Length: 297
Image (cartoon, rainbow, N blue to C red; front, side):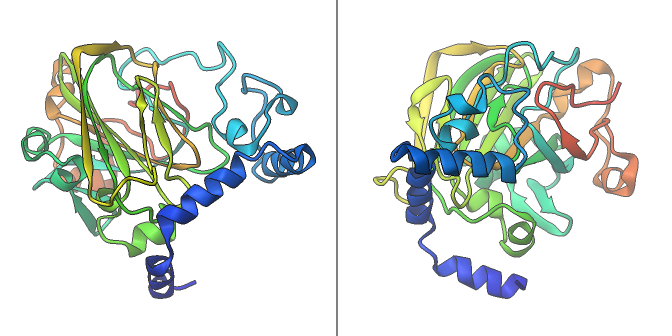
């Protein structure tokens, strides 16, 4: 399917309603024979790693429960240096925040102010580093805090639900800044860090572990609506603690201020150095696992 045809086809689809419908199908538990057929077919097709799962496959009553499975205790020892990777998946893009922009792919930028819905915070992150993680259906779909600190605020931005696969990332301008998302503000002793969970087609529902009231893609939500959640006192979190859950795959965008790296004596390089293959400060593109240290030794 060409990018143009893909864009116009998905533009006319009722993506929010379709996502809720798929969600209900994935949560199907009765009739039991059908639920079991869907469950085993899903696990086999996507080669789900049940060795790490909290429960055996037969203990999950639906695809949705399997998809949002927890890990078995002890299977993911945490790295020894923050930041950690917040999720399983592929670290597809990362670079320096310049002129208030990050990139979804080379040559296609999006506004950090639009992503975060906060001009002053976007300015504060100028010169920092962003990292974009893509989660496919095979992956573990709980997102964890990559740093220790305090959650002071979360924003639910009701947006579009475009797919976030490679074709969509190449076709849809400012994809991550227009899709449904939850922006989590983490206060650290090295500056404010942004963790952004981005929804997608069939991935509209996201839930937050630190605030059970925050659930996305609800029928009453209106595109463009921003719901602000403040926490006082701020919620204490440690690197590796659970942050939230995707109820079908998607994307996580992390944005770190340049002050986050300065205590280690590191300097954020120019965009040309990052794009040129130097890959500072040691992020490695490709498959990553939640809990691993995000920077090279």
